[in-house]
Image (tube, rainbow, N blue to C red; front, side):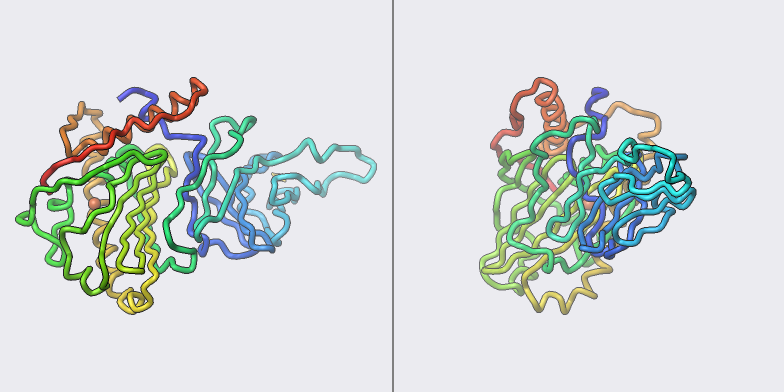
Length: 349
Ligand code: FES
Ligand SMILES: [Fe+2]
């Protein structure tokens, strides 16, 4: 892997927080890509993100007070609007001329989409791309369809987290359990893939396993899985006129810590009845992934040479290629050319 490939992608959006975790008139500090950020929601309900460092003496603004309009720093009371502009410095006498517009805190672009708060992490804060790229849209659902949110902290780099997320071969080994599958259930798979926007899609197909569970839902069932740079996976299940979407977002908090959010959206009212039953299963599933990543770190700490094979490691290879192409196309100031071919991958899992 080249140095560029191991870098965390910038000039892209990262999912920062499920919207429901940020109440109106409240703020909270959070690390994103190694930077301290304060996320807040103003009195009108609009979210914002600022650098969480007071320009006076550097204390995090998130330790201060927020009244839904302005943040007051806890050290000397300087006040900042939600756009980062300074409005008041209490220690100044009326006769002391000081241009408040000289003081400001960087405001990160921040948007709430389908119930989730995304923050744009720029490469260079002085020049943001115009227009900003798009935030991946979850098909056929609205914010109110979000029925379940789970989170987990993975002790690894974003690259290994994404590779693990898109890895088709670990299922029978990592996710063994009586309710899901055993090693013996390994069978040959063949799936069609196509390039899509900043990623690739396992094109719509009938699910092979769990057909009993799907029969319960009723109607013709099909599933499609899309990956999108920097680190979003959207699984969309269509069941007759209904939709179920499982969305996984990976957010690098630092170079060695990735926060995973797993969202479930659905439009089937009765499915909400079994939500309490689903939760522990999903939790176990995510913990199995986290535990294996944890063990993997023991080996990765020695920076070994790693092997990728056909076809099971193709998605991993595509991820690195996509990332490289995004960086390269920006450097060369040309349109992004998706390196993923239309193809069929075959593996056993
Ligand atoms: S450190 Fe924030 S006002 Fe002084
Ligand atoms: Fe997994």
